[in-house]
Image (tube, rainbow, N blue to C red):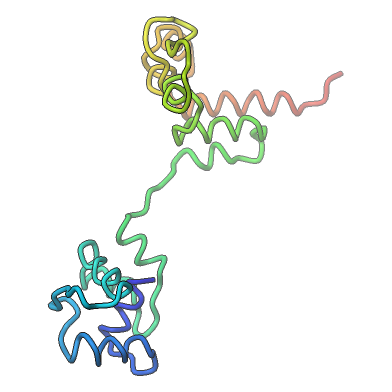
Amino acid sequence: MAAKLIHGALSKKEDCLWVKWINSIYLKDQSIWDYAKKDDASWYFKKSLSIRVNLDEAKLQQAARGDKFSAKKCYNSLVGETPFAYANAIWDTLVLPKHRFIFWQIANSHLLTRDYLHHIMVTPNNLCPVCEAEVETHDHIFFNCYYTSQLSTGGWGTFIGLLRLLRCFSIAAMQPRI
């Protein structure tokens, strides 16, 4: 939102009251990029100026097409688009909903592992219950644990391979039993 207001101030929109106010009180025909932050400025104007650290004119022009401003394009230019290669495999309609939920949590590191629970509440033991050698973390469970590494070399191979295996189980579970 602040980027949209800065875009309005740069394009000197005369139909926007906020832009008129900023130009007459603070900027006074000065560029918003050259304006030095002052203590007597309004809190909202200070917040709008703080976005200049991450936003430059090129990113702002990329998000704007003429007078139209796209918040989505501005956000993507600031953060960058993150492609989820695994999302299509997880949210496939043939995968059971409970499997979708669990694997989405795995992919985004949101499973309640013992190391995470140890930060929230006191747990008597935060070691992996399978091997009892290391602290149970996402990396340990899926990559470093001896037993899970034995399972993965048995045919899963990769996370996508595991999702394919899960899809096969889901399809088999949906088949009518005779």
